[in-house]
Image (cartoon, rainbow, N blue to C red; front, side, top):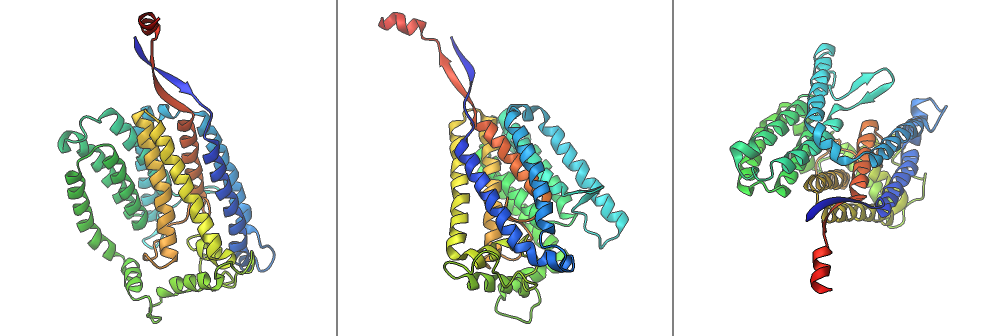
Length: 384
């Protein structure tokens, strides 16, 4: 008789090595990019205040990654809807805090004692897990809009709406794109997704214009040569940083722009400092590493015959490469300023934790493979 058997393999050591290498590069570059900001913030007492905080968060993130490597990823299927429920509750709480604190208070973070995290980061991973689980259970229904696609699209739209209200328009758009990619891979009809995407775009335009700074970013991007537009300052300084680096860079720690010229050099625009200090060559090495990681994730998805594991791998992989592409595109002036960070390199607590937790899930998928084991007794009798 035919039966399914779970065959355990070793974790993908190549993917793990690539991730640890990118994380190590991120540590070095974050220390360099944040040193001037740290000195300015502490009045010259320390040049490593951001680096120290990053190391503490990295330890937590690596611990969670290790835990998820050991945790059977298939168990997430049973709690996927609960994770979305928690995300919904956290986003509501952040909006309540925003309302109570005043209209000028951003609702993107929740503060619990010394801990600060962004509910949208947790919602991003939760939606990937939920969509993967939904597609695994309802794969035959997904081509039907009413009984298949409507439910995940509605939940995705609700989560994105709550994130927009924080306000965090860029993250909502990215989560929406990730969701559409997972649904497309899961077999949803292109016509259904195109219709939903068109409605989302029609709604997004007026929503984007509700906040003046969003419109200013687009106007500034369309008029990058106009120095009279204040929003152009950050983008212009980023390009100056990249230009300073040339082919081989000015050397580690030798950036000029990070010293109060380029705002947030250790977060959204750390890639500009990488370009200034390590040059075009250093930038290409980092981009090449991310491409290798993405290729490795696709390999994991292709080797996995468990639909839940496939959809989960695709979602996590696209999330990682999409964030990377958008950040680099913003720094190089291809896209308007968004505020999205580059995974495992930029300074940021919850983003780092969620990214490495996702990698832990991927590594767990890589060591588990469903294989069809065929009884061979009858075959042996037939062929001797």
